[in-house]
Amino acid sequence: MADYFERSRDNLRSMAEGVIIDPVVNILVRLRCTPNFVTILGFFTVFVATFFAAQGNFRLSGMLVMLSGLMDVYDGALARKLQKDSDKGAFLDSTLDRLGEAVILIGVIYYYSSKNEEIIVLMTSISIVFSLMISYLRARIEGLGYNSKSGMFTRPERILIVGLGLIFFSPIIMIYVLTLAVSVGLVHRFFLFWKLLRK
Image: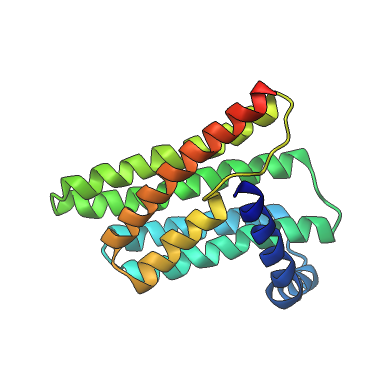
């Protein structure tokens, strides 16, 4: 199952490169944008999305989340195109990715706190913690010297759930789906890596 998800992500990435990634990256090269600039711009876009989510404008917020997700793809592709891959760039990208993923959900928490929707606030809080834990497990396993990108509901899938959920469905449905997804993803990745460590 884990290999299936990994192959699916790789296939989607390959198809997207020629259609929506390479043309935009070529434009960014002409505009002399740096990968770090695109990374920071994507993070700023998440902050704007958070403002709209906190105001209850969820559709616009979702569109901005999807735009930010695309920027996260473009910064890495641009770095490879310009041969500017660096540890500092990867560190900045990973840090702002995790912050951005949490910040947008904080906007949702703010909105539903004002509506006294305690269950939604609780589920959204769980989603933040579990999402960060999924990323932490990968970082920890790599810190132990293993290399594994396997696992269900990684960050791109979570961004899709949040972005598309806010655009096309209600934020409440999005939170229910996200909470279920990150719960399954966390348990799956834990046992996947636990099995890897036992070998």
